[in-house]
Image (spheres, one colour):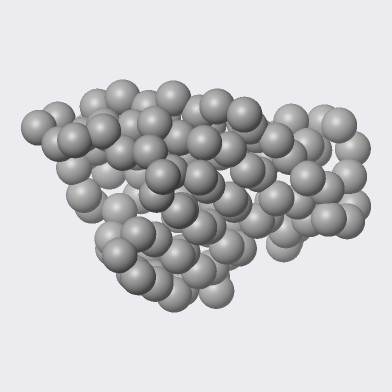
Length: 123
């Protein structure tokens, strides 16, 4: 994996949080392009979302008011796959701050990176 591809994965992750922090359907629009059809999300509370359609339906939640990504790293698995890891601090209006360790695994599919697996572990 080239350094440009590693930066692309870091940028995708930041763009995802930005989309989820925007009113309207920005999150769904962004992830409709980035999610692999068989993507899986493992979220707090034992929530498991399987498949692009299920994940997109769940993205209709209240947007994040603010977020900060720290210690972001990209680990190359192969020339066509990588993992992004980081800490996130985020908050929705009227809610307590949310902090988690996050990992997102991407692989090239149809000549572009697609999100295959996303996991959040609250801290």
